[in-house]
Length: 465
Image (tube, rainbow, N blue to C red; front, top):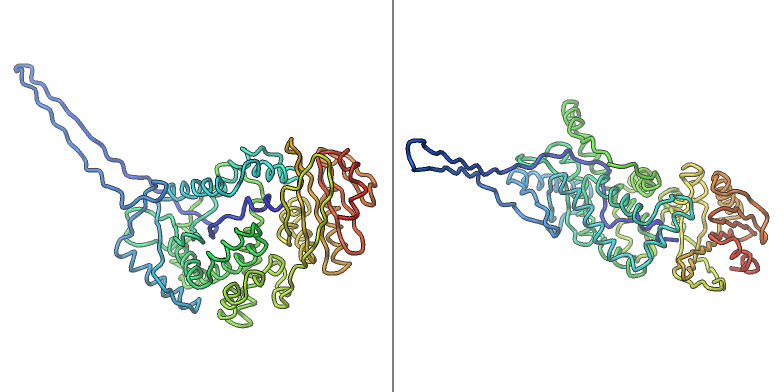
């Protein structure tokens, strides 16, 4: 189940705009032959325009733009600004790669595909896509969804900082001495991430999550990191006068994706860029930037499981009381012909991601902030059919009821379910995917299966997992 969300948990930290493309220069070789009618002698003249060698190439052979001395000096001034507002100093000069916009977008696509090959074992992507199909997020094939994911990477980002190689990447216009106002704002944002990488061991916590194959705490900590970068970027652009603001606005690119993307692709970004800054402002109000830095130092000081959860981002009160998810034990079910292929925990972002497009953000978030904890197990047969079991508890009975009601609303809003019926102590929604839901005093249990008869065969186990 987790993999349907992890398709969007990219390694880079992103800001939400893009830069205007600039055409690359073209070198031309001209050749001319002149022959005299009265003479057997011929002459030829060849004029060659020198081809300028690229400054450098990245790992994919894409050209990097050389920053002039004036731009390098400008970046040092931007670093001082970032240090002032974050309250920390750079321990080393950040490494940065500047691209033309087209090459930057190509880098994002190629790096995503490279990570994709490493992240997904044989058959795992197909199972992730089938999971999304069964949750009603889309009806796409694996190739179709991969193509959309690649386009999302290509068109969404204005600048990036990679958690592992620690390189700041930004598209800029070529042949300019200094960054324009818009590019400055993007560089400020990404410099904050670079500073975070030097102080908060962002590579270490990512590697630990990756080793555990458990990204429960990824959305929460990324939300605070993005919020800090947004805050400092806002201080930079907030100092623009009216003329600068007009200039800045004129430099914001009008870049759109080449194809229509599903709206649920943007749900994690809503957490990072909408809900995260609300919490960060409260943290800064209560304890200045030092308090936000303290929250980001948690991994170094106290370990992975003390990092903020997505629920704490959706509901700041839960951050200040440090409410944690409960560890939920989910028993295995015995299913003839099926084997357990994956399992894990789930949190607030999982619920919002699953339900928001069908029931709206407010209903989904209200349900999600009441989760006590959750766990899931996925089973697969030799034909690639999938059985998913989910077990959820609430903070209290009322919160559990609200989560139950949200899933009922989610199911009843979808025409893909042709009917519903009482089944095994709960309600079964019947369709190409069959969805079963049941609630008792302590837990909400969900099952999704493509096979109606399969549910009949395990009906005696559904109240016990």
